[in-house]
Image 1: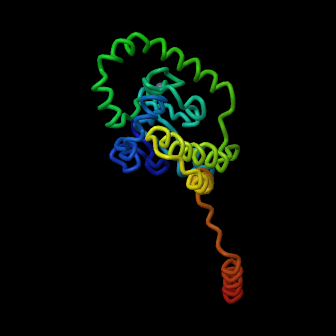
Image 2 (image 1 turned 45 degrees about the vertical axis):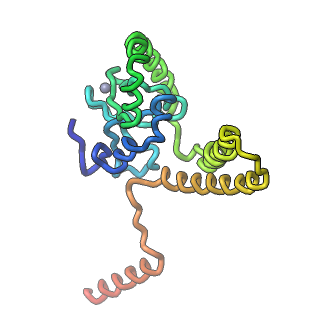
Image 3 (image 1 turned 30 degrees about the horizontal axis):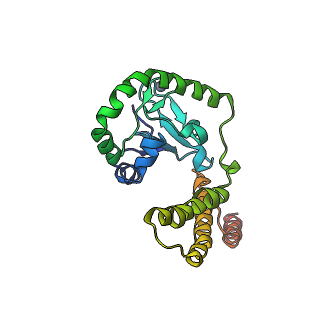
Length: 232
Ligand SMILES: [Zn+2]
């Protein structure tokens, strides 16, 4: 499949962003437990004036449809162990596997091979039903997402709970309540900062609207007028 390189920024191996997804061991949990996957090829429309989140496309190599990535957002971002199902041709859009996930899959091969073969077709039917439900409604809009709220309660607080509460219980360390409650606002501020960054990042427009500063505009305007007068 050929892509318009003038219009799209192409994310595929060996692009560093994609390499990061393949090499980051943390993603084992996302891939193997939650079934959150990243497609092998992602396209970003650079000629669109929409927010970044709304101009990311996932091409289907079988029917060449450019699917908006928001089809696999929110609740439909989970459970894609067999890859993404294309809404147009119902074939599988190939996804990446993290190398650590692959290692785990190789070791646990006898545990999942037969169940996966047995359930694959049924699961793909489920995927189609889920897609049909997503297609019934308008896709989520970038501006309707409160990134700051997600940052604080989806990232900051859970990270604090993981590091300060769960790890404490697990390692059997003594509880230091003062440290614990000093850490909480730090993680909340961290989550807040992450939210601000995501809000800025996900709303970036593809086409940059170049606007000269006011003083410069006035100056070029005056200069042009003067030149025109001289020409007359
Ligand atoms: Zn397709």
